[in-house]
Every structure is written in C-alpha cells, then in structure tokens.
Image (cartoon, rainbow, N blue to C red; front, top):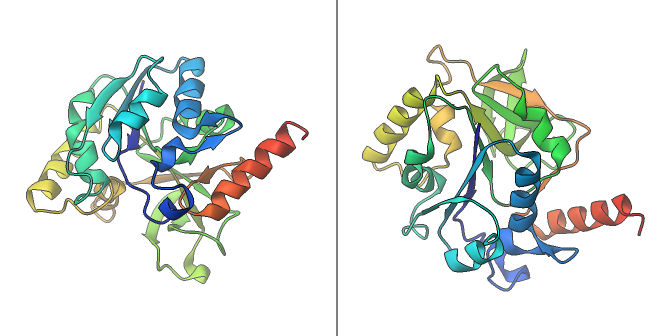
Length: 239
C-alpha cells in the first residue's frame, strides 16, 4: 500500500490565525500536524509514504526530515489546486499497490486510518454522518454510494461531511490517472484532486462512502477546528 499526503496549499482561510505558516505545520502539544501524521503512518507500517508540497515547502519538509518519505513539489501552488499537486506526484502511483490519499491539514489518529486500510470496495471516500449542520464539504450517499456532493448542498439533502481522505485500488489507477491528465489538459488545474473521482459519478463507476461516525477527526481549515483538536487532546490526555 502507498499513502500520499497532499500538503501544497497555502490555507488562506486560517492563515491570519497562524501567522502565514503552512497549516500542516501548526503544533499541538509541541508536535506539528504534519509530523504527527507522518509519525502515525510510519508507526503503523502500512507502506511507502509520499508527500506533495508547495507553499513554504522547506518548512514542511523540515518538519518530517527524520522520516523516509517520497517527496514531490508543485511549484505552481499559488495558481493551481490539489489536482495539479497530484499531477506532479503521478509517478508515485502504482498498478500493483492500492493508494490512500489524504489532505495534509487532516488530524489523524490510528483509529481514523484503520477505518480505511482494510477496505477493498474501492474507490472509497470517508465521510461523517454526525456532521451535517457544521459540514464544510457535503456528501449525499445512499447504500454507501456517493450520489451528490458540494459545499452548497442543502442540509436536507446531506448525509454527512467529507473527511478529507480516500482510497483508490491499484486496478483503478490507470483510469484515475487518465482522467486526471484529461482534466489537466483541459486547463482544469483549479479543482481539487477529489474532482477526478467525482467526474466518474454517473458513468457506471461507483464511488463508495464509508461512514466513520464516532471517530474523532478534524481538518484545520478554520480556527474552530484547531480548538476542537486542542480540546480533544486535552480530554484524551486527562488534562
């Protein structure tokens, strides 16, 4: 298995609270988010880890310098989105290994990763049905199949919030890369990497959803999420 971490973005929505540093470099209990993520993945011994950087790449790589990680860089991070970052890391993909793709601003613990590691009904995205009212990016699913998606999805059509992590089978990699190349060549460099998967909906390719309701997670897009993580760790550690 391979794990690719998307960590090229600037994080404009929270940047004023973190003084312009990469959002994956914010610290919790003295450990940066990206260091924690790579440490947890390394300790789980799941397979090769890769990372795509962009904004303040040197700062991000310094945080994980002690780990064995395949490194990729998107020099156009300021004018592109994560689909372009993934394009720069396309050589990381393999037709013999499944790949987990996760956003670098995601707070992870083993319990979260375990929810996706052994899943073989792919491609798959994680979602949380307990978060509808406060959801940032929304999914509607039925019988574990993605039906609708988007930030503007009404609450009464929302099944839960997208978590920021997915998994693609090695058998699907060539189709995925081909579609990504097609979108890049059509100048669609301003969309997310997940839009490659979304583009398959309605084409006979099922995109599966796994509901992780009850497992703690947070994406550091807003200061409120930073505070949620801080409170979670204090509760976990009994402080």
